[in-house]
Length: 604
Image 1 (tube, rainbow, N blue to C red):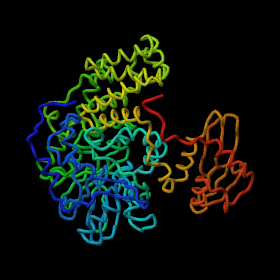
Image 2 (tube, helix red, strand yellow):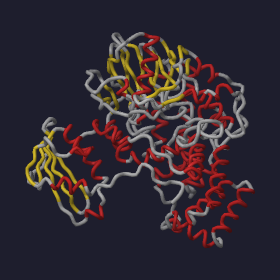
Image 3 (cartoon, one colour):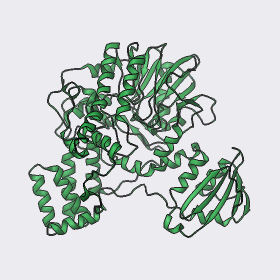
Image 4 (tube, rainbow, N blue to C red):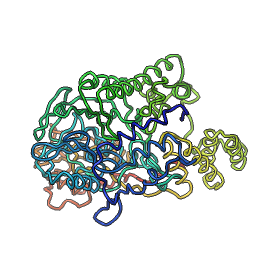
């Protein structure tokens, strides 16, 4: 995953990352109301202080981490600022006639408030006059409560289908994604040269209060214009790129192009290791080309919701062109090789980027990687099955592990075999074999320690930050156990969800086998929204639909959305209008499983 041919003497990125610096947050620590630290950029100061990378970090990744470790308020161009290094993402601030427009307000409210405070210290007490979400990943909306309140009368702008995908990723699959995200960020590993150094896009995610205020202005098409606080925005829709709903925008008055998360200083993910919908590399490349055609030849600066800007029209076009070619090449070559009979794993082993892209810093795989990007493209077209019937009905991990241990003559001999491969330098197969032993003989301490050691060595050699983090977090959990997951996304976003999204969130928690033989129905009259829903439990499936023809039910509830949220939070039926059998609610809630945010990953 590394090369010796990179332009190590080119200091352009460092110059760009430092350009426009106004001031840092000092100290770079943000705490919540209880005094707990939710962000600490000072912990990464060692990256700036130590010039030469240690043996425990890939040199290319060390360089990227040092660039991302810069923290503070930066001027992008006249009237456009960014706060960088105070979360995984950047918060952009665009000055208008009366106040400031906030773009992508970080992960958590505490850090977003600190970022806005830093801006106001140096640019004056400007009110927030609008908020823009470029896409529905929580590092681009989660801190909104730190810059505006839920009742503030300001435009909140987002791409079409924003709420649909915010719920799909952060609520429906939120528990599993956050748990995997702890590996993605090496949450349990200590910050430092032998632990967590970076996430490729930024240092880490903050761990404060996450919230969501639903958008009230929707962008539906490329070329749509909105004037926010006197500032003209020209939007470009880019669905299916870095997120299922995403948009870039151009500020003609400032000749500034915001690429959201579609063009950063890394090869991005086509399928994140934390889990998500597979992205469309073909359309990603096409939308980048469209951005060049629309605005690239007139923009004077391009910036994004991660990393640092690029200035100068020629440099902007070159940057976007290489980003475009990277995703297009991976897509087309994967399809070419796939149609010659190669599987995703085989293509990932053989493919190589063209020399111009291989030697460009911003196309290196610090966050995504060529290897798992290719596998994502294969999955998008062909699914999980590689076509080999021997792989069609494999045993699950624990059953496989038990059989590997037996086939190798017991756990001790299996560990010896895995150690031999590790000693030969074949860490990849050593990890696979040791993992089988851990799953087949969970109490074998030698297997756990060997796997932890092998994963640590793999992490130290990884250029891709998320690979490093997965390896090191696996090693940490083998040695220390599972740390507590810090963020409950689903609960923090509940108030922003529609009634249908709330009911869908219930449906995915119904324990199907326990509900097979039960039947119940509830009519919900949500009076403040003027909406009526009929819900029924049928064959273990919780169905609901709006404006039902049949309004008979075991129980009819008349309530507000706030009362619905309170009931789902366990506050009972007090104050809610009831007609029928009230015990139906307790029966339904008793069928719901609680998601486990701390499930095992590297052990059975």
